[in-house]
Structures are given as structure tokens and as C-alpha cells.
Length: 309
Image (tube, rainbow, N blue to C red; front, side, top):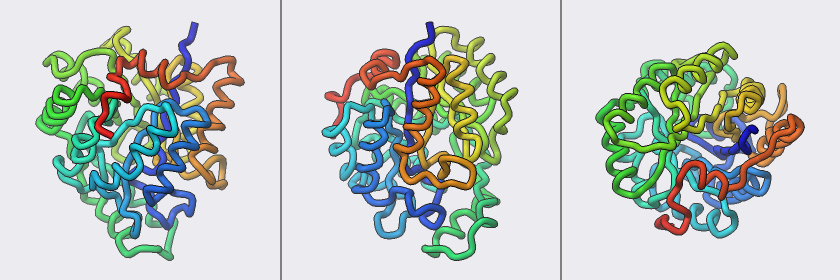
């Protein structure tokens, strides 16, 4: 029998900018409301970034996170997953500040350095709300998203061993799965592993169904029954790829971090819209959606009573 499917929702991220959608949550209040709505719609994990409430720029300030993490926890049973990816261009220490302060049940961990090109989005817009937006996108022409083995070890020991936080291992390419396998061999992390396969980012693996199948096959060889896998896909590939993952027995991630749309040419008005849509697809396939407590048990999380918020 297929296990209930864990839905993760990433409400805001650090890639899209305010000009791109008026529905993108920016302020702590908006992030709170978006997260609660996503949880009520069926998301059991909320993957969180923070933004400067005035400019919408990605911001690593733990004080911003602490304006929404306790409120989401109070209103929902969802698992809080604090990003360590932060915003492109942040230092390793900046990226971990919020997670080290909050000591969450989960945090994201990117499993390799890579080109991370979001500059093609410059072609879609001309009238920007903020001066930083086009500059931010353009700098990714000559940018490497750094996640060295030293960075990975630092995060796993400071956050994993130090706080009992488990990781959402974000794998943007085949080599990232092998990086994780090597990390496992070093004894830095223990199963079960939660692997988020990421498709459609320029610089990472393309959103082709054959790539999804191959990544899944290799993960099975490397991790056997000691892992849970999930899929996210950028932009227009979001729903098609998450649907394919669900059919294959995987878990799924949606949210405005990954795509601003609910359908062709139609902006999603909320994160809950995307969660409702993928939940409807899952249930129409005859499958079920996992509760937060089911997700906690399967991922062996420490529990939301063990966080620092």
C-alpha cells in the first residue's frame, strides 16, 4: 500500500521578487497567514524563509523568523522547516542564523555547489517595484551557490548534532545524491533521510520525466528503505512533476517559492490554492495525504515541543 503523501509548502522562498506577483508573502503577517492557510489546506510541513518587510528582499534576520514561527506553531500542527539556503549571496553564517536561533524540527540543506541562474526572469519584467530586484536577478549570471563539503559538515554538526534538527536534503542533480551518500558514510546524519529532488532550476537537473525516474532509481540504490523522497519543480513544471512523484509513491512540495502559478497564465492567489490543487489530484488518484504527526513519525522528528519558539 502507498503511504500517505507528505505535502510540503514553501510559501515565499528567496528567488521570486515582489514585482513578479502581488500574492507573494512578504511581511511576517503575510508569511504567517500564508503558512496557516497552507497547513489548513493539507500541508504537513512548512518550508520557511524571511523577507525584509519594507523591500521584500530575502533577509536572514532571526528576529524576523521569530515574528512568524511561534504564531504558525500556535495555530497549526505543521512541522516548521527553516531554510538554510537563505537568499542567494548570503554567507554560510547568515544562512544558519535563523535555524540556530529557532532550533526547529527540520531545516533545509542543499547538497552541492552549483550555478543557480535566475537571470532569465529579467526578460519578463520591465517596471520594477524595488531597485534591488533586477540587480539581484542579474548577478546570477556570474554566481555559484556555494555548498561545499565544509559548509555541509558545519551545518550538520552545528544544527543537526547541536539541536537535534533533521534535514530536508535538497538535491538539484545526480551528484548531490552521491554527496549525501558520502555524508551518510561519514556518520554525520542518521536515517530516515528526507530527500527533496529539485527539477527545473537553470544550473541543475532539467524537468524531464526521465530525469525524475533516474534520480529515483539511484536514490533507491543508495538509500534503500532508509529514506523518504519528495519532488519539487520550478515554474510551469510544478504540478506535473509533483503528480508524477505522487503516482510513484513519493512525497510532494508546492508553494510560491517554487512557482507563482496555479495553471497556464494564471497566478496563484495564495499558497493554499496550490496545496488544495495538489491535494485534490492526490485524492483523485485514490491516495491519501499525511497529517503532520504522521510526517513526524516517518521522519523521526524531535517534536514541536522541542523547538526554541
